[in-house]
Amino acid sequence: MKKILVIGATSAIAEYCVRIWADRGDVLYLVARNEERLKTIVADLKVRGAAEAHTYCTDLNNMNSHAELLDAAEAAMGGIDTVLIAHGTLSNQKACEQSVEETLTEIKTNALSTISLLTLIANRFEAKQAGTIAVISSVAGDRGRASNYVYGSAKAMITAFTSGLRQRLYKSNVAVVTIKPGFVDTPMTAEFKKGLLWAKPQAVAAAIVRAIDAKKDDVYVPAFWWAVMTVIKAIPTAIFRKIKL
Ligand SMILES: NC(=O)c1ccc[n+]([C@@H]2O[C@H](COP(=O)([O-])OP(=O)(O)OC[C@H]3O[C@@H](n4cnc5c(N)ncnc54)[C@H](OP(=O)(O)O)[C@@H]3O)[C@@H](O)[C@H]2O)c1
Image 1: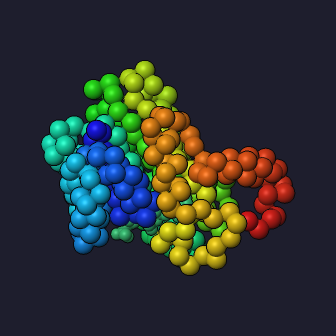
Image 2: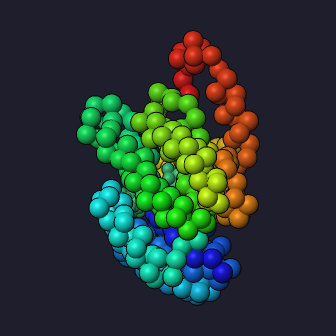
Image 3: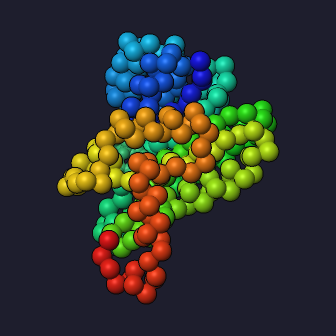
């Protein structure tokens, strides 16, 4: 039985992860900003068999709440074995181009808030020489594209930060799992036309849980995105700058 903290727990992908953990009988601590949604999810998890499901309500851009939410999770569960950080917003690229404020808010939600949490969690796990930290980044962080480079650059920051953190914490027996999904059919992408490259959140969640169990380093979900991104990253800049992706 694991003690799992899920940050951004009302995300569609995170919700399917917590269902799997509830089915296993794990102890869960869910953090999100929508109290009603949290209550509905917890009611469902209890029916599914979660040993315990606690909640904490906060806007994660309020970084003053981060240390307190970690203290509350540790107190409620008697420690934390695994953390999944899943919150995020798909930035409106056009709006960001017209507004410094909008751009910085998106960077705050998709990168800085996560980096604040990672810094605090890393120190706690390093001190006890145990734990698994999983973060949902994105394939969008692998190469900036005109259509979503604000979101992509925030995710690139997460990918680079977790890469460094993984090296730092290796000798402390702390695993850092960076998850890079491709296109996933969730509320975040509700307005997009879906095609062959799209995955369902259930399948993505199952792959995330497997990656956390195996303490993988960097995982593309679904796995074929590794090949797609290898090709995209290999395109010379002189060509890449002219194409529309
Ligand atoms: N869907 C995709 O195609 C895709 C692809 C690659 C990576 N990802 C990443 O996967 C993760 C999960 O996204 P999803 O697809 O499951 O989308 P989602 O269902 O829209 O979930 C996003 C979650 O983030 C929460 N959130 C946003 N800003 C927050 C804040 N300031 N404080 C607290 N919670 C906040 C939202 O809460 P509210 O419901 O209260 O707004 C929502 O629960 C995100 O990190 C996303 O960037 C998604």
